[in-house]
Image (cartoon, rainbow, N blue to C red):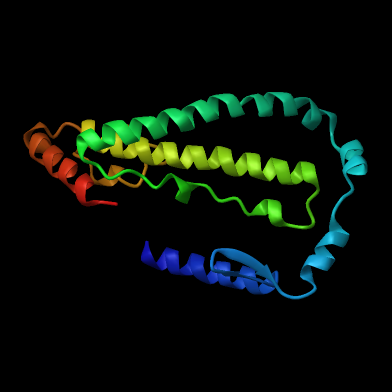
Length: 184
């Protein structure tokens, strides 16, 4: 896993060099002149809209309506973790680390594309935040692996008690609860 993380860091560094930017103090900084080139690549809104496929335009209202349940999920999870995690003595999750809004700063995107990028960043941030809240909640209440294979288990799942291991479950369950208290 560590090797994969290092490889990812190397790929990100190569990408930064290739596209002439660096991240300094959490800010994206392009090399001189790159923003000027990006502005020339921006698609004007009306021609871009007229060249869009009808099926994409028809889907926009349905896509935008999804913001309502995601806002509710985000709000509900925030309240839940602030109340229940305190009761369970589980450290609260830093919600902000799941939300990255930087693509709207790209000068080659028009206003609609920038809004889409913010929308996608928010939705994926809520999903990441929800996954972490659910993972910690599952480790606290029911840390048992499933009998069936999971497609993409969360990061805590591999430590769970084996399915059918009733002999060790109660002891392992208590250890897993304790480990949540020291994890951040």
